[in-house]
Image (cartoon, rainbow, N blue to C red; front, side, top):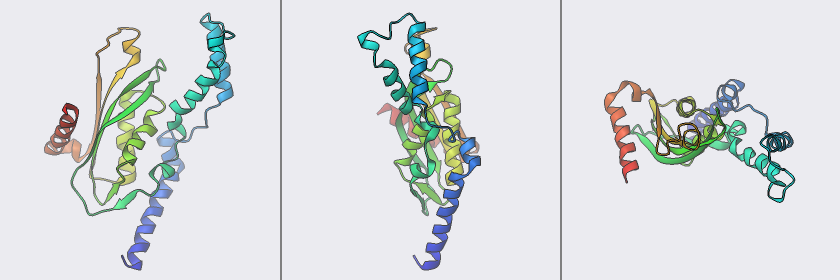
Length: 224
């Protein structure tokens, strides 16, 4: 690579970093929140324990407020993920235009209606135009959007739209399946119910064959 090409690549990388640091992008994807106020969470958990008739002074619950606050710092870490640090310059200029698919990405999230977990698998595909992203970054992007209070439909869409924003590909497809604790352990209590959501953007939405090829990859990966 000559000096001119190096300058062009560096400029492109700089543009991507500026985009990832922009207030518009951070606000659009909910990445501009403050860190978890652990002291406030501890106080809230203490009040909840009293409210449900428990004794926070008994041995098994003495450390519960602190433990819950610490757990939530991890469970909602997606609100404060730094996208620049997450991608870590792992977007590359590559002359490759065939489909890229990453399947069976395990994820967990919290239902925003009951704050109970839902867990499942994500399948992500994209058609590069002139950029690809490092393989390990796609599961991290899934985590960035799943580790917060969510609904599965929005989660699916956010992953797809973020990849469009940073890669400018010819298309992005995301399929997510999950089991929701809010319907398994309360309410209708249907233990085997699964929810599937999808987002098809660009060529995946407009080209029937492209969409079917991706769905065949997903079906193959889930049946193995």
